[in-house]
Image (cartoon, rainbow, N blue to C red):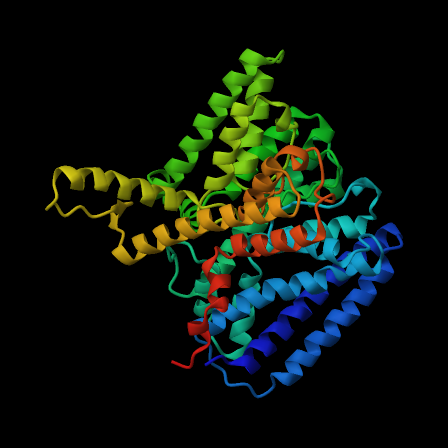
Length: 483
């Protein structure tokens, strides 16, 4: 059954890690001598006490985990981090409503980037740093901390990794999952540090550079400015962030192969090709349309198109323009980009390009089956045969994804939200994008949404971040049976 004591013990350790993060943000508040220091100290004290209590409850737990334990740990970790992570907002009065505080925190840890804040620039530095840090930590996954923690308890992390990284393919670059996790974290931190330096070189302040680098590599999109990246009016910054958003959308195990010199395998990866060609196609289409219909130069049309396509393709959600002012046909292009997402094994959201590759090959084979009913036509990706079980999982995932989007959109409309806004916020939340459509596009916050809809969208953020099955399994009666 479920090893509840060990789950509580691990959760307690994770809360102590979150306590350290809160104290780090308290250090930022102390450096800037701002009033949010007390809220971070109190939040740290509460989180630490609960963490120590859970460690005590889980003392002498059996040192073993199964796959079910992994699913429970991952789902509860995200919720727990969001509950305790909202304390600085709520205690300090920066977000006075629990609903809004939880929404903002879940949006951060799920690397969604949707915000209810209408006065971002008035917030103290500690709060802004905490918003950025939630996305950086949530981007690659709180579960990687769990993988680092589990050896302390004498266990491996494969069950937890399988629950969090629930995409259709998992390429192992090292037989020990802990070593792989450390390598990936190294690339993640290296990309973040490099981006910070490049942004500072481009004239952005050090604090803003750190926050935007966190939000870029975590593909979250929380900015320290209400106008997002548009605030800086800098082509250099837009191009640099575009490049790093694109890199953050690539499978991190694939980036690891590139770092190790396996360039040929990197270049010929089927998912990377789909991702790259999708960015090229939509960027070119939108750029040409904007150039023909707007009084802007070809360079500006290309830059705005490139940035917005990559931003939504990678579910980052930064903005350099209000795309709701573009022709409506371009909204349709952006919706497609939002739904598809980038690569599996990255910090991004959406259905993922690898699933699109598999679905396209399944569809192509069906046409061949009609002509040659007795033919055996395996689905191959990167010269490897995709098993029928994985094909079924991909089909089930896509079906569930579409059904949940439809049902959630109808619920939002029933709560009084317009159709365009309902569809946009639901797709944005499920895909962990950030900006939506209509009144909740890139130029506006989501503060005007009804409270009930914010809880629904928070749940959708969690669903999208953990790729549906990890969370939905907990609502299955079979999951809790002893067999």
